[in-house]
Length: 344
Ligand code: NAD
Ligand code: 89V
Image (cartoon, rainbow, N blue to C red; front, side, top):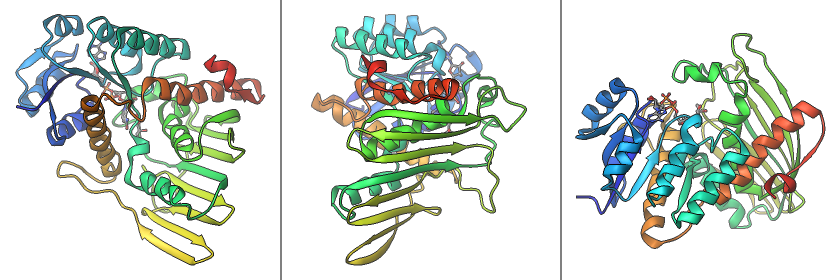
């Protein structure tokens, strides 16, 4: 039996990746699942051989018998489920986006802190192999101190096929996808003091914005651009790759399509293949994301055992979520928005 036993709530599209990865994680496994939709509960329960099944999260928590909960529902239920976990003193992982509002996210951090339990937001993109490789180049000092960056995700992929609810939300690409890209920008260049954003909706069949361009002023003086689009048809589709350009005072770095990392400095130019692994259950082009799910879940288990804070703790992810809120405020007002007051 696995050392740590978990329960998973929300057996939808993405949870299947999480369930596969819980099988592969060392030191933990899932012993109970919950979904308010009995058909999803049956499908996932049968696929992964989970006998303990619940259609009501309150009943799952009342029965207990697990060391942590993995909340894989859509955003509307995140606050109520995290607060339920806090009331039962159960350490929690919660999928991104953190919450419907920044006020909800702050309340979730406060509730888990008061209960003395860890909260990790499943912000997996920073765990992608190519993103970790970029961070390593910076840590090794290969380009010196970065002063400029671009974090770009431009695609024509039909994301609505697997996640139809995304066509219905008034806030779309920044809240769903840009949230990952903004988190990568923070992970690579550090926290942000202010931002300026512009958005567009190109696809007439959806409710929210599907293009966003965001200019970030980082605390350390670096400037970066986060640009995301689901309205960009290209010769070859890059989904779901985040492309990165970084200029430093001693060199430059380019992460280009096909997971190719080019570093140029006084010693010359090196090109490295930083492709993600193709896990046994994975399928292209999702494998980059699927591998990062395994890595973040293993990180959770290791941190829980060690009593250590996770890389994307609730407290950390508030800073990413504040960028999402600021980007919508900036796009609406046309003004630059300071991040500090949002986090106060
Ligand atoms: P989905 O609609 O396919 O699945 C959600 C499931 O949760 C549904 O089966 C629904 O019945 C269930 N559910 C909702 N509220 C519930 C509640 N209160 N109690 C029990 N069950 C409940 O959605 P999805 O596409 O799997 O997305 C789920 C979450 O994962 C979203 O927040 C989404 O943004 C996120 N997501 C993250 C990534 C990533 O790379 N991190 C990728 C895709 C989706
Ligand atoms: O993260 C998400 O929820 C997904 C995807 C990775 C496709 O953007 O929508």
